[in-house]
Length: 400
Image (cartoon, rainbow, N blue to C red; front, side, top):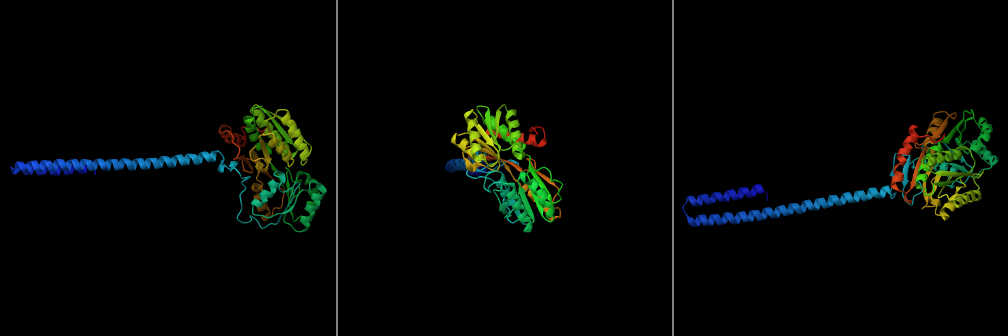
């Protein structure tokens, strides 16, 4: 009952008192006064009960609101810790603990073109070859595959065979295949060949070239590794000093040195020799490096060393979390589908080649994927966005 209602009731009863008094009856006056008093007391009690009920209601609403806010804050905290997918602009994200990557899935193929891939290593190498297979598959396309063709002559035979079979697009996924394409492509002018990593098309009208600016993501990961390293010493296992592998090494070194750490680089001279990568990684750990990284398909050996010695790992080309779920900090992942979409559109429009495409942080072809299972200090992770922005706008030099 509101205060206003109580006052009205008391006023009405008071009027009865005056009427009774006017009638000259003392008993009537006394009775009226008693009624006014009793009614006033009852009204006050009712108002108090109503006020208490209102207070209880307010308390309930407040508790519910505070509970909802706490639950929301906990959910946000979980997302920050990697328990959910956290997108930070498309070129940086945290992959949920237990997941290995985040390629988009097309509901239907983006093109009716037939596609074949010839690549030097296994389709599930968690490195160079898998990055292309994952990208084509993400576009809803089931490519024909010839993998593990590190021997150039074997790859050339596969490339020619697909062209003879009438495949629309043959992806020659290996820098070493350039010489073969120079010979084969002119023989099949109606076939479009897509070649990488390469920064030029050799003047061939039916060859597209593609390359990643691997130094960009390498620089970002180098800064994170330097901040995470207590020893200030990082071991790098590279394959051959060429192509995107060399770009990654150069960018990573520049990023780590910018944060005051040193990087000891070993090139094994091979893309696929796991034993040599294992040996190189072991030497780095023995020399005091407390962070490891590397490029190419031979890194499975280096990651096994990191896992055995509980040393954090930074990867590139593909997401490598599955090789060490607790120690892979982050990977630079090649999302070739970003440029393949444009290449397929060009082919459908009648352009079979003659153009070069590049993966960058800006076009989100390069994505920094953090492992949700690795507990990385939020202060370290928080600065990654600014580093990426600096690389994209050119205010940060990656050493290239």
